[in-house]
Image (cartoon, rainbow, N blue to C red; front, top):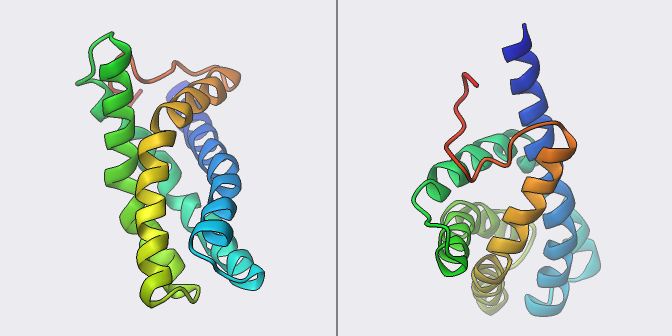
Amino acid sequence: MPGVLKRHRAYIADTTALVVFFTATGVINERFIAGMAWNEVAQARFIGALLMLPVGRPYGLWRDWMMAHASETRVSQLFWDSLALLSFQVPIYAGIIAFSGASGGGLVRGIIGAALMMILLGRPYGAFLNVVRHAFGLPPGNLKPMSLNT
C-alpha cells in the first residue's frame, strides 16, 4: 500500500504544481502577449486547468526522464528543464488557446510567446516542482528518473 500512496501523492504534487504555476503564467501570455479578451483568457485557463489534471503527472515523469540527461552544471540543468517544458507543454498549449478563440496572428503570437515562456520558465518551474514535491514528502525527481512503480 505505501507504493500506491506514494503514487497518489506524486500525482497530486505534480498536478498541483502545474496548475498553480501555469495558471498564473498563462494569464500573462494570453492577455498581454496573445491579446486575448478576458473572457477568452478565463476559458483558456479553465480548459487548461482541466487538461492539466491528466497531464500533470505524465509531465513530471517526462521531466524526470529528461533531467536524467542533465549534468550538475547550471547550464545543463537550465537546458534540460527548458527542453522538457518546451517539448511537452507547447503543443498542448497551442490546442488550448486555439480552442479558446485565438486565431491567425494571435494564435501564432500566443504559441511563440508560450514557447519563449517555456524556455524562460523551464528551470524556475522545475525548481517550483521540486519544492512542491518536497512539501508532499517526495524526492525532487531530477536526481534520478522516477517511475510509476516508485
